[in-house]
Length: 86
Image (cartoon, rainbow, N blue to C red; front, side, top):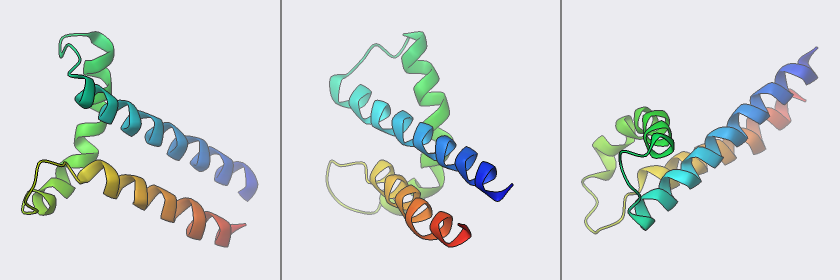
């Protein structure tokens, strides 16, 4: 039973990682903000970034650190927590 739950969590976390990578690529490529796919990706990722941006906005420089921090958190969850459940 636990294996199924862990697999669903892994799939969900992989999908979130993919959305974050797409979000970063969209911002690098300056994609059309009115494109439905771009709107979907931003609508999915911005709520994840928002709490982190309170802290990362204080870091000087042109980089948005929120996506990188979220990716690190997801990797931590996948490596530490999921493996400990198994």
